[in-house]
Length: 603
Image (cartoon, rainbow, N blue to C red; front, side):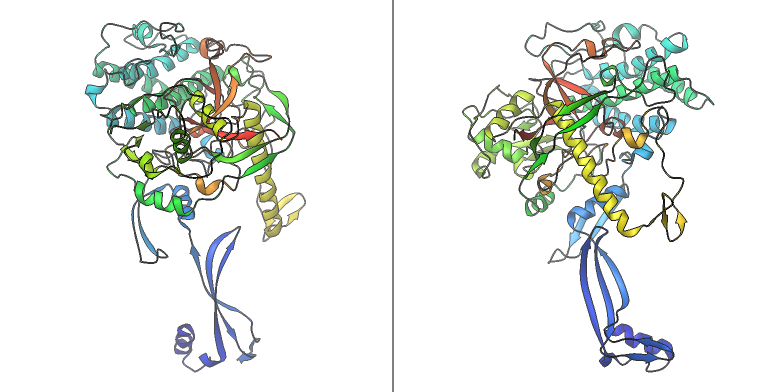
């Protein structure tokens, strides 16, 4: 009643008798958020001057927004902030949060992250900040000549490979001479991805020198190539051919930024990206409290569109670019099936290993306090098992998950998605009573999620905004111009998905808990910070044509050993993680990629 006392004081008279009123306080949870609302209501009709306030009529006093732990995290992400610490009252209902501006995270709205077909200078500068953070801040110079993964070149190769690749593509279309030193094209054009079973078997690649060029020379070359890109981006017109070369270089750098990160995750010398270490233990407590069952959802039979239209002759105009494996656009009919809401977690994988006859951990874990702890076997697991309980504490003790912040006790990462090879996760899927989806089934899940979200948005919009003359109006103000799709192919809104709830683009530098989301279907890139395995081998599809600028990109891997992965990890730029047509792949027994899996089953 303190508000009525103050009102009387301000009015200079006893306008309101507190005994005539009651206070109504309530918590509201709906589609617009969570909040506390407080109102006064008179016990009988009250007349103040010529204003009648009827009995029980509510007079709103205040509205206070409230956030659950999950809602708070989403708020920080939407605002581009990162929590570095927090202090709570004894009841946990009230907290003080210390937030800092996140300089690394990329936009998650396709209207921003894919607003143009060609990456602009702002896009490049953001990517370069991420690249420099990893290569110059997290990788000690003495580690540059090391090979944390023996199947790959030394780390220093990638520092020269990235600028060399984009320079080569630009020179192909501009006919300009290569940047100096021009001999870099011989040693830095293409890396290696050998056969895991027989590393002597490898696709064509650049020569590997006895000694790599000095770091300072490579960085000077990088600066020269970046200056060339800046000059092109600042020009008044960028042709479609030059735009394609720029786009290829941009996405190529995105992919190898992740390559370098999963390589240095296997090193003991990796430095963290910031001095602020996440509160893994506190996050684990919150995740445990928020767990819900991982439900099965019906995915209806539907016809989906795979791929995009981006002819190499540029006859479609200024449409978004795609790699050769994304073309041409085609329709596929996918039968009905069931899918679980979220991916397999570390906790579920630990239970599988605990009950397995060959419990060798994935390389994403450590058993001896070392980033080099290893090594996986190839085991098939059990076909009749079901996930029903948690692993015993003795099994969890002494095990860790590798992160760029160092080793995190496995018991603090049980709710994270597990990332492992396809062969490893296939055994776990069998043990849990499911299978890994085909690429068509995974895309059918994403399409179904998109449909459900559109329906929910339309229901919500229909309750709050009237439709007039086909345009949405709000209090008589047109929300125009109304959206109209691109005349020459898919628009950014159609081709790219909103990644607001996805752990991609360096929102976090590690996977995050997903066990609170088993009651809803995860869409594209919503696996908690890992890619999604499919059971489909990378194969040449009808209409596939190698791209002229880089004909080996996909064709070199039609060997029956690579499976398609979709989505993106915590380190994947939104332009890739959000593009509905993007295709990635890894060998089924490759141990190091950040890829997880969800279960599906037949009806």
